[in-house]
Amino acid sequence: MPANPKKLRLDSPPMMALALVALPALVYYLWICVHHFGGALAWPFSRDLAALLPAPTLAAAAIYGLWLLFQGFLQLYAPGPWKEGVPMDADGTRLRFRLNGWFSFWFTWVFLLGAMLAGVVSPTIVYDHFGALLTTANLFAFVFCAYLYTTGRRSAKAHRSGSRVGDYFLGTLKQPRPFGSEFDFKFFCEGRPGLIGWTVVDFSLAAKQFQLHGTLSTPMLLVLAFQFLYVVDYFYHEEAILTTWDMVEERFGWMLCWGCLVWVPFTYSLQAYYLVNHAHELPFWGTAFIVALNLFGYYVFRSSNLQKHRFRTDPTRPIWGRAPEFIRTQRGTLLLTSGFWGIGRHVNYFGDLMMALAWCLPCLFAHPLPYFYVVYFTILLIQRERRDHRKCLDKYGSDWVKYCRQVRWRIVPFVY
Ligand code: NDP
Image (cartoon, rainbow, N blue to C red):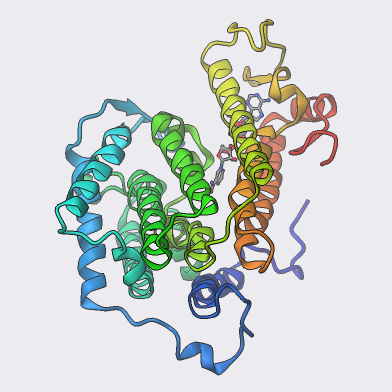
């Protein structure tokens, strides 16, 4: 069906131009609310808020620069196996990726803890420079994306949409690598500076709570432990990223790059930031419920992703003690219809959403701000499911329709 020209699509140049301004503004707004207003929602159009925008500092530039160099160095030289990604659609070649995220993650933590114990790095360093770091990371992401845009457009493989904004926003190349090297910018940014950085931000916020209140509250410990587990899980299963939508389908432009370098570390840590100055405690039953919700969400998320991954590598491997059931598509691909993939088409998203809620609940209900993450993530995953549905419909045609008839629920079984 042709696109309705009157309808402003989310991926149209005017909407992308708006996102380039609105998304960074939203991150600043969230930070101002949590830092200056104790988590209360400030009137977003007040001129007074502009005065609270943090300027970059030399110290923040040095911290951020050293962080990027350190992670880049680990990506290049830390031990880890080389694995091939999926074939590129242009010519079927497979690029190699060095899977040393597990080592890099733990090495970073040992190094940082050592530096803190030796008194070289303050545990509250990220909190103390948060505003300036946020501005530094934003500036870096915008400039780095300009570099990706200009170098990408010179490449023979560049995708050109006809819109400069579109090419800057969505990128021109799927797998930009500098000077023909094997350092993959997208693979690096997806995991290292942002995700490892997120755990460091959380840790620093917890250290600030301890410094201010002389205690680490149960909610802070829960948020820290849950998010740490999420990132550890990512690096333990690092190979799985090579087949994700982001790695296979998306080009590397502002949307992904800024998302990984700014959005993830500076907004996913919002609950921990909120808890710095809200050192309340939880009743035992509340703690037990939140832990159970996170563990159950994690079980659903991890097991469903593993079921599909293992089925794709060995379609005879039993699922829940029985031979897997599937639809054989006309393209030859098998669509799993048993286990979690027989209950819903994206139960993995449901698991992720349960965890997201468990990360917000420790903040209790005085302010809506700490629930930003679960609301945003629900919108993101509903959008993503729809995009994936359209992709699979195009790819598998009537086989996908048959699959959808057999597996009715999109994300939440018996609800949606
Ligand atoms: P999925 O892992 O769900 O993969 C979807 C793809 O799997 C489809 O395009 C299709 O690809 C294949 N597929 C679909 N149904 C079946 C089936 N029944 N049997 C076999 N193959 C099937 O999607 P994502 O990459 O979006 O998500 C991966 C994980 O990452 C999720 O758990 C999600 O929650 C998480 N995530 C986390 C984010 C965060 O910010 N924390 C952001 C986005 C995702 P094919 O063409 O190969 O058939």
